[in-house]
Amino acid sequence: MAARVLVIGSGGREHALAWKLAQSHHVKQVLVAPGNAGTAYSGKISNAAVSIDDHAVLAQFCKDEKIELVVVGPEAPLAAGIVGDLTCAGVRCFGPSAQAAQLESSKKFAKEFMDQHGIPTARWRAFTKPEEACSFIMSADFPALVVKASGLAAGKGVIVAKNKEEACKAVQEIMQEKSFGAAGETVVVEEFLDGEEVSCLCFTDEKTVAPMPPSQDHKRLLDGDQGPNTGGMGAYCPTPQPSSSSP
Image 1 (cartoon, rainbow, N blue to C red):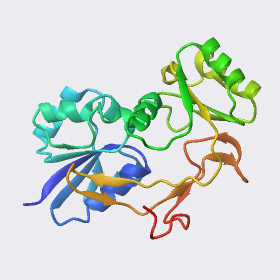
Image 2 (image 1 turned 120 degrees about the horizontal axis):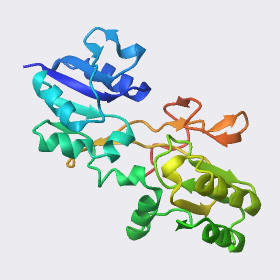
Image 3 (image 1 turned 90 degrees about the horizontal axis):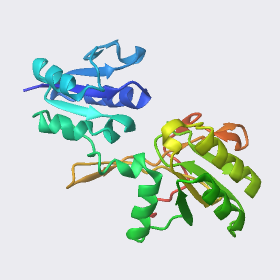
Image 4 (image 1 turned 180 degrees about the vertical axis):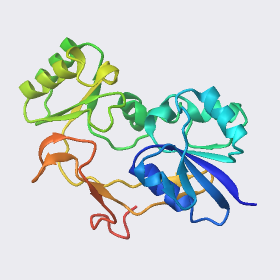
C-alpha cells in the first residue's frame, strides 16, 4: 500500500528529498511544509499550508491527512524537538531527537563530544563572557583563529580571523552586538586549520548506515576563498579529494 509522506522544510535540501521520495512505488503522495516554488506542483509532490512550529497542530494535521511518515530536513525544527513531539503523538518521524541534534545545533556540545570520544578536532575553548574570550585569544599560541557562534546561525555564524585583533572584534560582534542573535550567547574559539573541507553525510535508521557521495560547498563569499563565510555559495558532488580507499 502506497503511503503519504510529509517533508518538513523549504529549501533545496527538502526539494531533493521530496523528489527522491516521490520516485518510490511505496509513496503515493509527498507533501512539503512549507515548501517552495519547486515543490508547489510537481507530479506526486505539493506544498502543505500547515505550521511546522506548533507541533501539536502539526501532529493533528498528520493524523487528519493520514500521513504515514514525516521526514525533517532543517536543523531548527530538529533542535526544537519536532521528532520527539511527533513520535509521542503517534506520528512516525524520521530524524534525530533534540538531544542528538545538539551535534549540529551546539558547536560547544559537538566539540565536547569529539573530545570525549577521541575524534580529532581543532584545539578550542568555549566562552559565555566576551572579556574571557578575548583574554584567551590574546594569549593563544594559534597562528590564526576561528570564532564561532555556538548555536544555529544558518551556516553563517563562523568568522575566520587573520589575526588576534580581528578575532577579538569578531567576539564583540557576536556576543555584544548580537550579530547572530541568541546563537551567539556562547562562542567557540578554535585554532584555524587550513586545507580542503569535504562533507560526508549518511542516512541511518540506528542499525544501517547508507553513505552519500562526498560533496564540497563554497563557503567564502568571493572568488579565491576570499570574503566572509556564508551558508554556501554553491556545491558540487562527488568531489575528487577523498580517494576510494579513504576510511
